[in-house]
Amino acid sequence: MTPNEIHQLKVTACKVRIGAIEGVHAAKAGHPGGSLSAADLFTYLYFKEMNVDPADPQKATRDRFVLSKGHCAPGLYAALAHRGFFPVEDLLTLRKIGSYLQGHPNMNMTPGVDMSTGSLGQGISAACGMALAAKHQGNPCRVYTLLGDGEIQEGQVWEAMMFAAHYKLDNLCIVIDNNGLQIDGNIADVMSPYPIPEKLAAFGFEVAEIDGHSFEEMEAAFAKARATKGKPFAIVMKTTKGKGVSYMENNAGWHGKAPNDAEYEIAMTELKAQLAELEGK
Image 1 (tube, rainbow, N blue to C red):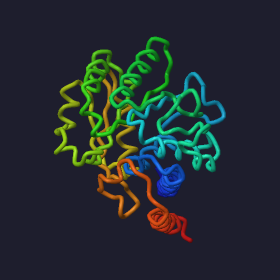
Image 2 (image 1 turned 90 degrees about the vertical axis):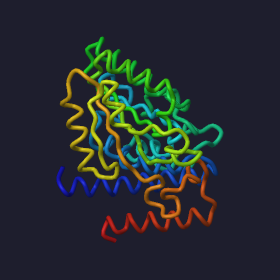
Image 3 (image 1 turned 120 degrees about the horizontal axis):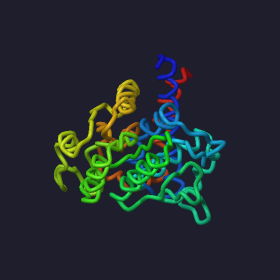
Image 4 (image 1 turned 120 degrees about the vertical axis):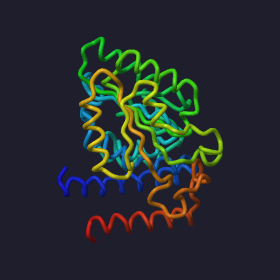
């Protein structure tokens, strides 16, 4: 990537964070912490990595993305909106009655959403099925899925890992958002999944560890994923929960609650200042 491309991704990621916070505040409910930690990943996938077309969201050969940690829908929706799948203004309808932007992704309602998710542990299984089906059909698409580090405490996740390795799903790339926190606190205290990379390797994955807020490291990892043949690929990305909003960062309390009006103003002031600095205003 050129420096200009990296800069533009940073600008877009900031807008994705703003959109996620605006949606959660308008809904008075939702999950900001994990949406913010994954905002850079959402941005890289939809603006650099994935073969998708907002004008043809059901194109058969499109790449697929499954948000296995479905509660972080506000971040995904913001990325989809800025990519052109639907109007950015609709982010303010999050969780409203009649809105197609509900608290968890719904593939039957939301343009750009490839799988309905929310029950933790199940999204990765759907992604494995998509990847295997693509191989049987000779479809060149790639399948991506994002899991939370608390989510990988679910046993079904590791059944899916075995499945992916057994069927040599080299068209599958899983990403784990290792922000270290889940709704009940530090993942190491609740039910430690560590060491994550070693477990993935033992289950038959090629593994990369990256800074989940570095687009340069993402580029290298996804290039390696595409080049890997005969086995699935996993990216463990170290991130900061609540990234970009000072009082949300590394605070498990912001896993699943909305900011009040005063907190919202602080968040918007901080994020808009970051955006202005990036845009040179």
